[in-house]
Length: 118
Image (cartoon, rainbow, N blue to C red; front, side, top):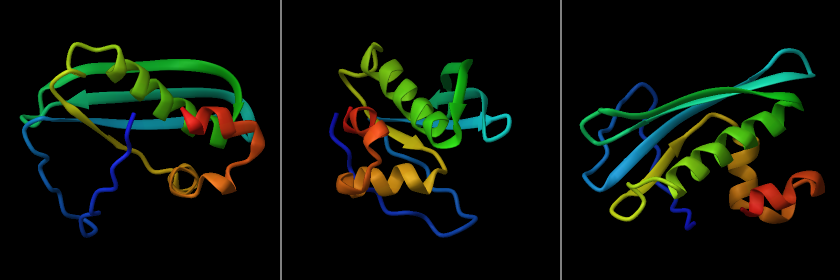
């Protein structure tokens, strides 16, 4: 999957995305430092129609692992969907560590390297 860097809108503004794109808003949560994690997301089209909604428990995991798991789950859902052929994917999430690793693969912790490389 190719990753394109998009311009970030100014704080508080909303910018609609174009026809031909789908957007996955995802989030992850961990109860404690290394406890039970949960992930979820909503895939929408340019008309803001909800195409997929998911939520699941992912077991014992740390915060960074949970954030990475939700991004991977969104990619997996899109890659196996009927929309992959005619659409590009935007994933919106809020983990600066994962964003940094995508842009600077050399900084990835070894334990997460295989997942970030996906």
